[in-house]
Each structure stands twice: as C-alpha cells, then as structure tokens.
Length: 181
Image 1 (cartoon, helix red, strand yellow):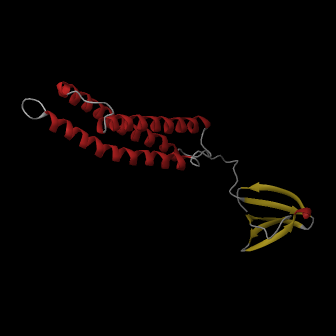
Image 2 (image 1 turned 90 degrees about the horizontal axis):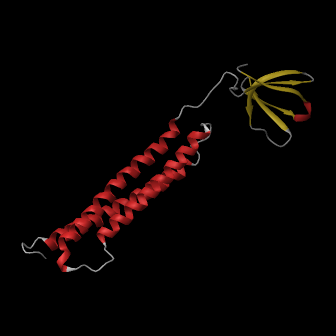
Image 3 (image 1 turned 30 degrees about the vertical axis):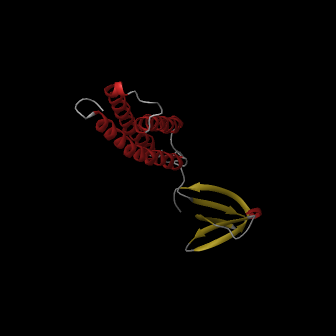
C-alpha cells in the first residue's frame, strides 16, 4: 500500500478486472474453435487460395486469443512475489498486460470473423454445369428427367413426368447432362 492508501486497491481492481476478462477470453477461445469446426465444410467450391487464407486466419486468431489469455491470466494471477516497494511498477505492468490482452482479444475476434466471411464467397457457376437433369438413351428410346435415388445397386433412377423410372445400368446406352427437359 502506498502513502495515499491507493496502491493495493488499484492493483486489486486491476486483478479483479483481469479475472473477469479472462472468463470472456475463454468464451472467445470456444467461439474460435466453433468457427474452425464450421469452417471445415465452408470451402467447397471456393478458390483454393481462399480456403488456405481462411484456414491461416483461423490459426492466427487462435494464436492471438491464446496469447491474450496468457497475458490477462498473468495480470489476474501473477506468478511472482511482489515487492512492497514496487507497487506502482506492479500496477503499471499489470495494467499494460491487461490492456494488451484485451486488445489482442478483440483483434482475434476480428480475424476469426474475417476468416469465416469466406463462407459467403460467391460460387462459380458456368453454363456448362448441369441443373441435375439428364437425358438417358436405351435400346427402346430416350428418357429425360432428374436423377432420383435408386432402389438398389445396378439401377439408374430417373424422375420424369411425376414418376420415378428405374433402368438397369446394363440397358443404358448413353447418358448426358442437359440444361432442361
């Protein structure tokens, strides 16, 4: 405690604040982990460079959040013995670690938000991509419709005219995607 009686209360307030922020940071780490799991399937159909960038940003956000958590934890629960003569230095160091940790926490949230924004990247569609309609040729004629789930192996199921027609694969002579039937 210093001469005006404020030293102990200032460091106590800083450590109490740091303990509260440390709880928030653990939530941020959980959020980053959840975003990383959701990011796993977000890259399909996206450019490879974007997938790499999103993955790298998720790792950077995780590293920043871990660093911030350590800094704030050191401010909340110091692992060194304090010298009563250095109370002002202890307050300054604890405050600096707390400010840096809080700033890094917000930066980590911003970086993970940037990483997950790749999920909204527009898909590349071209006129050569099929709408799911196919034209099937057999010995007895042609059939056009959408693919359906077959009842068993060796069967091609086509949904055409409001009904599902199943054809043995051995009867199929040709199969090609079409834009519409």
